[in-house]
Amino acid sequence: MSHSNIQDPVISRQTPRSDFSIDQCWLEYTADEHAVWDLLYARQLDILKDRAAPEFLKGLKTLELSRTGIPDLKRLNPALKALTGWEIIMVPHLVPDDVFFTHLANRRFPAGRFIRRRDQLDYLQEPDVFHDIFGHVPMLANPVFADYMQAYGQGGLRALNLGTLKNLARLYWYTVEFGLIDSPEGLRIYGAGIVSSFGESQYALENSEPNRIAFELNRIMRTEYEIDKFQKSYFVINDYNQLFDATQQDFGPIYERLKADTTSYGTDQIIAADSLIR
Ligand code: HBI
Ligand code: FE
Image 1 (cartoon, rainbow, N blue to C red):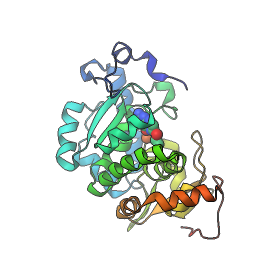
Image 2: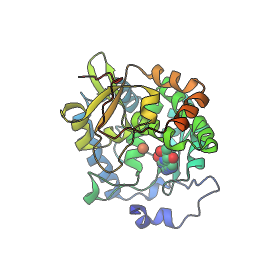
Image 3: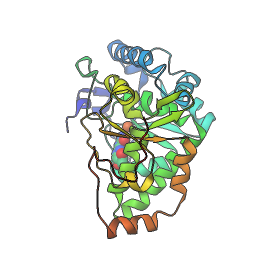
Image 4: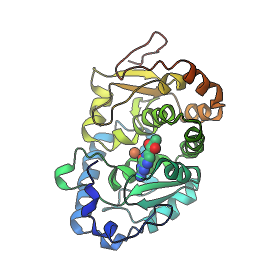
């Protein structure tokens, strides 16, 4: 993994706490780092205003993420906490799965402190503060989505114990990161991996290549994914209750079937049971 954050002196001088959190030290962001946020923000807002889900745009506005510069958690957290009880904590890099899920289960979202360099505007492998805050936080202001994320964290801890994390991680990938929603105004984006990407925000809705398949939990849990390319398949929900409801069922029988029949589907594969959207 390329560690773009090792050049962040505010990260490297800190010893993370046992939950892997560090201090944001917002006053220490440089003018150039704030300028990179503003550049990314302006570029994304322009293409997202008629592509992002209404709930995402509402979250951006309510939390005033449109203020200039990298958000200060001292201001953002009280606002988010008042809305849904979630808060953001800063971490130096990807944290271990059990740590990640424990945070989610307690309504804490771990965000990277560092911001990408100007030569990495379009893609970087590790989540930075732009992906994590611009991409993930607006949806955490939505009560139903906020509950879904917590339920996912609880489910993640169980999946770790049961050895089914691979299947559950696919659910996160195809919803939280790359989910689309069939809204009254048409197909819209709510996935953080798409809304934080200039190229994929257009590709996910407008390109004729990728499959757009109606959300189905069991199907998603068998679907492979690739992390460093635009997706070949997107899964489309009707509303956020569909996500939350899916996590309220007993995953025991689902995991039993996945273990008995280990069939998996390729990233571009369509199966007979799929309901295709557009
Ligand atoms: N750590 N900081 C951070 N951010 C993530 O999105 C993340 C992580 N650790 C593990 C992890 N994601 C995966 O387990 C999930 O995406 C399934
Ligand atoms: Fe993410």
